[in-house]
Image (tube, rainbow, N blue to C red; front, side, top):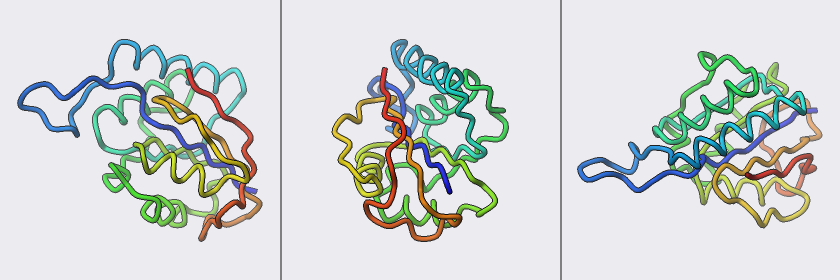
Length: 160
């Protein structure tokens, strides 16, 4: 049995003049929301074995805050450029490339890809996917290879 947590990055402000979308930073509320979600994970004793994060500044900051609050070593976050604005097929490929010894994986990324992934995997639709939403799934498999549509049971759906 595998567990997958999908997280949309926390609220970010617009890119300041001269900066790219990739460099957007979290708002004060975004930082607070990431702390709250990390705290909820800690209280539920949810500590993924691996966190896969987009390399975008706002997403990596979200990952680090959640990891710190949940008790996950921030130095063990795997930064993956391909998560940045990834579509459904890219996200499925990244999941299927995860080592099978990992039983619990968290991916922190961007919409619309994260929301599409949640709706693809889930046995029920996920309507709410605002910034810093986390959706957890139980996947009835011992392998990460080729997750199928509707195969996962939603075990968590939280947002600030």
